[in-house]
Image (cartoon, rainbow, N blue to C red; front, side, top):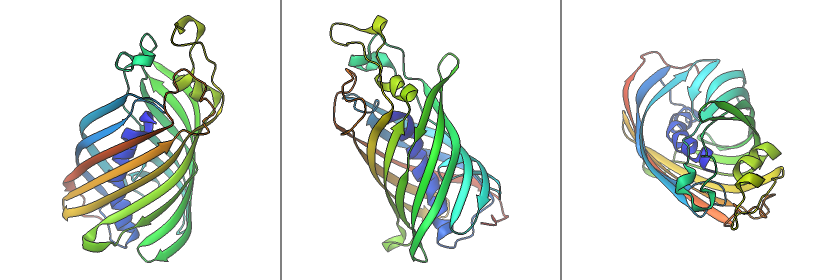
Length: 275
C-alpha cells in the first residue's frame, strides 16, 4: 500500500547496515547522512493510478542497546537476544492527493500516515554465518496527519523473510512474503465511500475488516565506498481475496512498486555499536 511503500524505500536503505551487522561487521554507534533516489507505487491498494516521487532526505542511524533508529523502524528495543527481539517502533509515509486519483476526486486526500506499535522478530534458521530466515509479527496503530491528527485503525503484517549479507561482489539480498490485514477502520480509510460522497460512478460502500494485500518483495544493496551505498527494491502485491474487492475504489487485482537510491554517510561516530 502507498502508506508503507515510501517507508519501504527507506527500509531498504537502512537494512544495509542491519545485514552488514549480521555478517559480523562492527558498525558505528551512530551515522548521519543523506538518502536519495526515486520510488514509484500504486496510489493506494488496488488503485489504477500511480504515484512517482524523487526524494532526498536526511537519515540518521542510532544503534543503542534500547533506543534504536535503524533498519525498518525508529523506537525502543525492549528485549534482544540472538534469536528474537521485541521492540516498539515507528514509521511514516508521504501523502497522496485525491485530486490526482480519478476515482477519488471529491473525496478527502490520503494524508501522511504514521504507524507505531509492538513487533516480535524471530530468527527461525541460519543457513550460513551471513544469512538467516526470520519471522516478524508487527501490530501497528495508524495515525493520519492531515490538518490535524486522527486515528485510522490497526494493521497487522506477519512476514517471513530471508536475508543474505555475503553474495557475489559484495551484494546483499533480502526477500520476503507477507500478508497485510487491516481492521474495519483502516480498510474504510482506503475503500469506504460515505453516502454524501457517492456519485453516479461511485456508489456508497462500507468497508469490512480483513485482508488488504499479499506481498512478495525483494531488495539488493552494495557498498560502493565506505561512505556510499546503493540499493534497490521491487515489491509485488496481489489484492486477490481482499475483504473489500466489492468497493468502487477497488480497481485492480495486483500492483507493483519499485525504488532505487543511495545513501551517502556524511559523519559517523568512532565508537562502535555493541550489537
